[in-house]
Amino acid sequence: MLHRIYAVILRHAYLHRRSPARIMEVFFWPVMDLLVWGYITAYLQEMALSDAVLFLIGAMILWDVLYRSQQAISLSMTEEFWVRNFINLFISPLSIPEFISALCLVGFIKSVVTTVVLAFLALVLYQFDLLQVGLGLLPFYGNLLLFGWAVGLFTMGIILRYGRAAEALIWGMPFLLQPLSAVFYPVKVLPEWLQAVAFGLPSTYVFQGMRQVLNGGGINWGQMELALWLNLVYMVLGGIFFGLMLRSVRIKGYLARQNLQ
Amino acid sequence: MDEPTHTPREIVRVDSLSKSFAAHAVVRDISLSVPRGQILGLLGPNGAGKSTFLHLLLGLTRPSSGSIRIFGQDLHKSRRSILSRVNFSSAYTSLPTNLSVWENLNIFAKLYGVPHPQKRVRELLELFEIPHALHSLTGALSSGQLTRVNLCKAFLNEPEILFLDEPTASLDPDIASRVRRTLLRIHGERGITMIYTSHDMQEVQRMCQRVIILSQGRIIRDGSPREIVDKGGAASLEDIFISIAHADQNETKKESS
Image 1 (tube, rainbow over the protein chains, first blue to last red):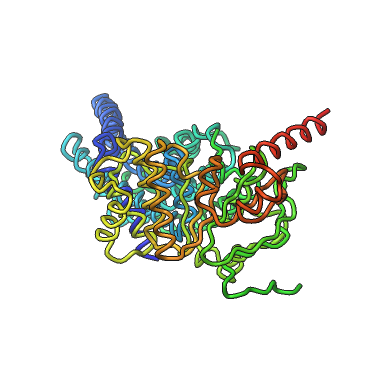
Image 2 (image 1 turned 30 degrees about the vertical axis):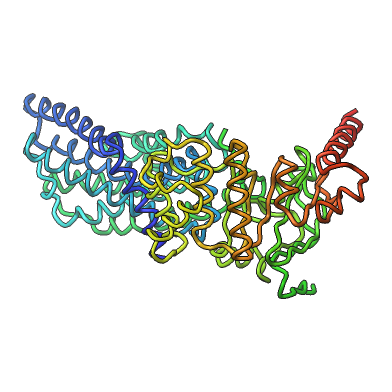
């Protein structure tokens, strides 16, 4: 089992080693985001707003964790369709859970690398120390990673079933969740009915929790636990949904035709 | 329900296999048995159901009814253990073009748990006469080289059954002939079972010990190429194929009118 997971990770290591564009993708966009949000934050501080606006930088860095982990699953699998390699993988002894586990690990590695770089730049450029979040960083990070994987499973299930027409969801899905997750503002600014939706997302508790910590409050471990439970529910639902979509494309014959029109 | 009996020489057994997409039946009640070491050619006009049949045998598509047993095991229940002993090469699949040949083959060697991948990859590249391609970027290969790299991938795990979907479709006649010779040599040395689809009748006649012709999802001929030609009273397999294709077209026209 481990050698098959390793094989998929090796495939991505080779890909990144060979492609400067891939390396750039891990660093370039997140760094650009950091620069934009960092300077907005610096400007807001200059306007004598509270130092608490620093949370914008923290939110941007943590948001990237969710984004990377979601992309690792959905984009990596779609790429196998683009290069007509998915059938080769599917008829090998690699199981779908092994394949997904490997993609999750790839997402984890990429998000760790990106976070370290962003945290370093934020410290140097804006004197924002991500480590001031303290121990809370671990549940924040873990919950966002898990939610990214769950969203990735849903995204991939839709793409598997509806093909290229649904590919925009790879990039669109996280941004559908961003306003609801209250990444850059508190949940209370949302209309009441949307607040109910927001509290159904594990990411909301992470960003609420991060703001609370940066404002000098402690970590609300109860909310982190709730986020974890929600994540487990979404992971299970994502897995079931993906399994059903895979079953459906095998029945309809789409998988054999790699029918991603 | 009775378990289908499995004889030791029988490596693939298909019983009453059918597949429909919506209301359209593509494979209809196919039963067949393939003995170990046979090279079986699947022929049929476009839309006859041969690709769907091959996809059913690979587990890519789920049957509407019927069963497939490979090595005496049910394909649906023991898919992974079966897949570790078979392999597939097709003119319609590829390998990531932005990786080198070695990188691609090393990844698949690891997926199949091949010991000493470097030695095995070099042996296979030698066998298919492309040893110089080892460190080339896969995307920089000619289509003939790429087809042979795909075949190297298909032989990595020393499969007992090899599914080949038009393996020489993109090759020039000289390379196609060399590839056929290599396949026959490996077959002669290892007694590997091959299930083969091709539109090249001469190739099928040269390669296959047994040919199955499908029309509208049914087996309409089954025998050695010689037997099929003799029974059909034709000069060649190609003549048989053309007459079946015409009959198929007429049938389709009648149905649609």
